[in-house]
Image (tube, rainbow, N blue to C red; front, top):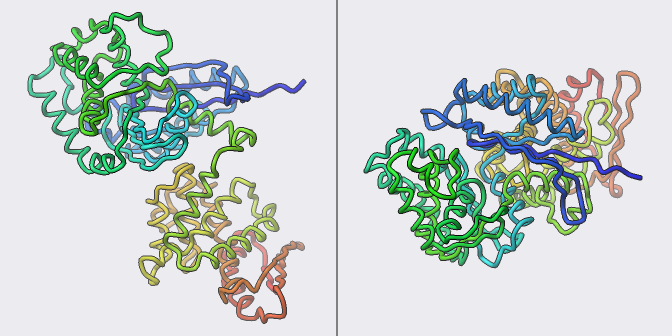
Length: 510
């Protein structure tokens, strides 16, 4: 009998850390266990520009506890960090210590990727009617997605969060009379450009997720005189009920008074007012009347995303998000997509032949393919130094489905497809660890030769084969007919020096 192995998803949030251990099932996944720790990683002054030492220590302690739980179930961990870590100047210290002390590798994800995973999680919990606005208010950021079922029409991540705004407007235990109004003005000012875009989509209902939304929904339930449901998933309330809760929250002049509000989790009393102002502002500005709570959000989206990567059957009805992101960026900015696609084909043939000597695995295969497909997007800005423009465009593009590390590697490999080899004097390259530096050098060496092999931009080199004998690598080309390959082979040879450096071998191309 085959044993289904569990996996663990770990959401390293600005307010709290969430661990979910689950196994794949026909319906998506079955939860084995959950664990939550309110860490307040983003707590403190400075608009979350640094992680304080106490917050970092709390975070590391929570990570050690949660990884122990995952390991007890034999579950490998996929961990992602959101706004508190991605904005902190000392994020690398936290990520490095997490690896050393807790044995967990953390992926720091972009706001747009966070929104994608939230959408994926919500999909597993509630129906998403046509033109719904998904709102997820976290400790450091708010993610907004206009969606119709699994299709998103608009995605935005804003630096508005319950802890961020509490630090700024409600740091004292006593509520200053002017603080709610000042906070509301700031939120609406920040929201203004986004609200204009949202209103163009005319969302008719809101689906709200995460801690702030659940806390407000529970207060609504108690104000109705209802018994609070054990599971709030699918709980629906109105914008008018939300306004009534806001009146109660603002009527409490101290955090202690707020803790006495029926239905409100006492541990959230200090940050709930800031989170509620964000939600009410969005609802008022979009004139949405009905809100539905989703018990699933980022952590469940992360879990499902991880499961479907390792369990193909789960992804049969899902779009290839990663490939679609790359194709979309390429077709928008590359004047010769057919050339880039052919370069990618040749690069993958070279990769398959060089994988062992380069000490690569299939995880790097798609990284290389993506870099090849995107290597010329910088030409949309100018031909001069277009490799540098390519790096900037990829680095700052909203590429769904990719980890921040993946995007950085793709951007750097594409950046080094021409001109200078990777050097430690290059600022971005210098920030990589030694393993990632090797990936960039190795994949860039392959990409350079592939580009040379299509120097004629007409796909005449159809196939390449690779053999390694002692300290010599031989690359043999095959044309699609009787075309002369002289220019292409010459160009590839001129670009082979980086592969020589990486492997310590001589390289012959015929």
